[in-house]
Amino acid sequence: MKTRSLYIIKCNEFYKIGVSADLKLRVNQLATSNPYDLELIYSISEDYDRIIKEYLNGFKLDTRSYRNGYYQQPPATRLLERKIHKDMERFKVRGEWYKIPDKELKALLSELGDCLSVSLTSNRY
Image (cartoon, rainbow, N blue to C red; front, side, top):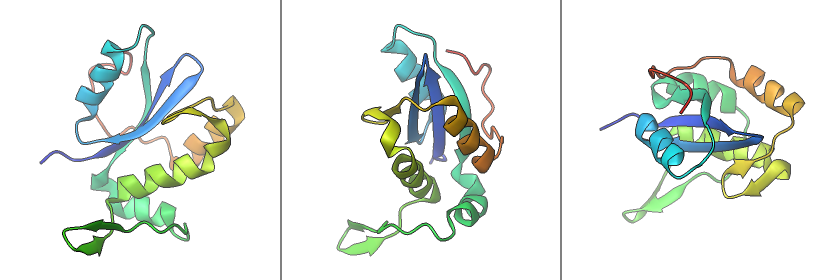
């Protein structure tokens, strides 16, 4: 099973914030269906579960999901995605695409840290 990663991808002035079990495949899918260049500007895998949970400490959201007859917590990357979506709600354009001003993006990336935890041959697609 592949490790999920939270990612932030830039396309012109827009940013896609999502989670994927196969980041390279997901970026390639987005690039195929998009006439503009994409740039992977941030990713963190669920291998960093402890770090993500420390960052999320105090984040209040009913995060349980109901599966197979009982409630369970989603992976840390999903929780982080939900928090970022909530924090960036005012910049939402459509779906998981946001038009985040530079100041807020820099603050978000600074808060998350500048760890690019996935090795890809290129960050541009």
